[in-house]
Length: 235
Image 1 (cartoon, rainbow, N blue to C red):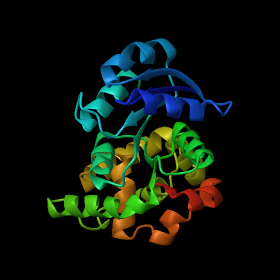
Image 2: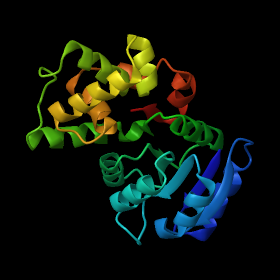
Image 3: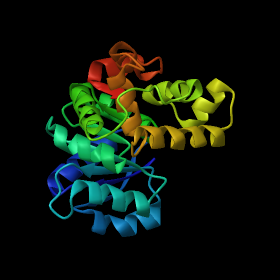
């Protein structure tokens, strides 16, 4: 899969590129310092992954993510961080990033997380899961529905699948409904709960008890065994 790396530090960007290229399925096609510089590479290569450092000076993080998603809608935007700061996580979720990953992990485990993100899964470090709860708690204090009482049984089922990292297609197959029907339900869920995206919906499901912490951290997907060690979970 093709990868574009956006990092203000040239040496760090190149180090990450060398790390990824040790694996045959990653091809780093560009290393740039900011989103504007990435635009030609996004247009030319149509990458599967865009790795974005959480601390950029060129643009606010959420603006950078939005710009990248608009320019390359098929690419998974993954925010990478060297810290455990929760604020970039919140901004990333609000802007619709596919994953928020820490660089403080083994290379093999980081590669696994990036593959999952490229496949459509939403991942965050387990050390930052509490920040997801804080985010949703803050949203409920500003007028969001505090329970899932307004959701139908089908919507609750879909929300549970979203919290476990399932894509719309996977949800449709599990519930024997079309992918378009799932999309309609998702729009209704986000509207009723006053949420912006499925990342916030997953966080809401955890906070409200629709899925338990055990369910949330113990995915029944292939990453259950691996990500339990490296500190990443589907959101």
